[in-house]
Image (cartoon, rainbow, N blue to C red; front, side, top):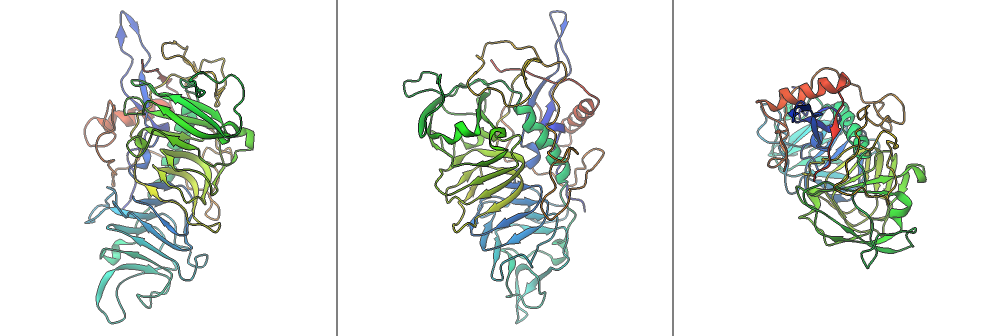
Amino acid sequence: MRMIISTISAGGVLLVAAAVAQGGDARPPEAVITPLAGAGDFNAFVEGDARFYDGEMEGPLAVGGNLVLSGGYRVAIHTPGTTTAPGDALPSALIVNGRVDWDASAPDATLDVFDGYVKIGDMSGSAALDRDRNGAAQSTRVNSSGDAYEDLPHISSHVREPLDAVEGEPLDVAAAFAGFRSAAGELATCPATVALLTGNEDPYVNDLPENAEVKIRIASGRTNVLKIDAAELSRISDLDFLGKPTANGPLVVVVDTSGVGDDFDWRPPNLSGVGGAEAPYILWDFPTATAITLPSGGHTIEGSILAPNAKLTDHDVNNIEGQVVVRELVEGGGGTSAGELHQFPFKGIVDCEPLAPTSSPGVGSPQTPVPNDTSLTPSPSGMSPTPSPSGDGGGPSPSGSGPVPATSGPVPSDVVPHPPGPQPGAALPVTGNGLALPLALAGFALLVAGAVLTLRARR
């Protein structure tokens, strides 16, 4: 069986309609970006290798490379997600495209998987067992010895999965990350609509001081875009929300890391006025970052992280309330336990207009928000995916795992992860067997052929 996510459209863009006539003039096709549609409801979706120390995530985990265990970690403690392979009785709560690297793992390490199946693409050096030393039936475990059920290190499922179901064909991670990289670049072309405000709610004119306490005003009925560079973001100690991000008024924070060599040590500020209820409508976009470290001393991150070219190293005890989409992932280590990853999948539909053709396609000026009622000239060249650092369009190769092989042709639909409930504001469903998939594939073909997509600002 081939386990492939089928919710991906090229660049994270779904065509909503063809050009329509209005007043005798043909309008460009309307489009929206669903940046994390390809991640389904996975709490963390990693292109390459992942290493886990102590900690836990509430939702399911997908790893495109190899898995290393270095402590006691727990996965899918609240939900196994909804990605169910054909013939399986339960969703796949842990998917590893590569293998479990037992040699690099700690000798006493464990990974507990709650209420879901384990899928490992390469079982070389691993064995699945479901009976203990006395021959009594137990929940399924995977270890390196294949000798004793109790041996460490091991992956322990809390359900009894058929042993022949553990080894499975991998997710199409290459296709997913092509979409993520394209979406991250497209978000960077959105004009800023949100400005940093002083305590008196006046726009900042000069550079932010250290430990700045700033405010942002969130409007409903439009995509709120804050564009900021890494150095400036690091100087914010408290970010106070005036208004709350919602389904029809999400917040996208585009962070320019080029000034720090795309290697960003980030202690997130205290986010005042938002919490778990708003987390599904907040997205942190790092389009060019290659390394992001969360050292101790930061605050909880409300919202999802889209950093498809970056290795994320999380040493902070505070939580991430959203999805994590990264090239590589290290959770914990550095002498501390990592915080929890809470299951708040991104549900926002991003609808904005690209920068004018005279503007740079990069992150742009963080302090020049475009008013909501300003019309911009769409770029004649459309939006192209952000090139990977390696220049091959596939992004940097995950450490130790080699490049993820590219795929061609339409994405098969053997396994369809369904995010919980419909995407708010979506004009078409992301999955299904009706018109949605043909239209999405048609959109993909048009994009490959060089079709020009224009993002329009919600008014």
